Length: 67
Image (cartoon, rainbow, N blue to C red; front, side, top):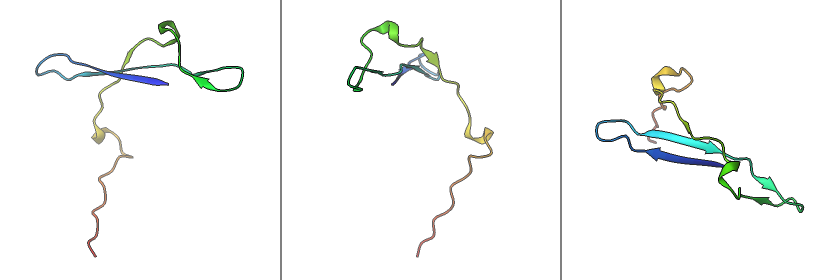
């Protein structure tokens, strides 16, 4: 399970996107259930800001053809 939050850093500042994760536990029957306490979650981590231009595998979408 992943939890995401946005931290407002004030006017004229980019917000921080933060995430934390938890692996869902299973009970005796194999059913999944969410975590039941905060100490089962990872620490909050801030996602890095990137620009799409920095990645060659990200390309401009092809123009659609009108038939």
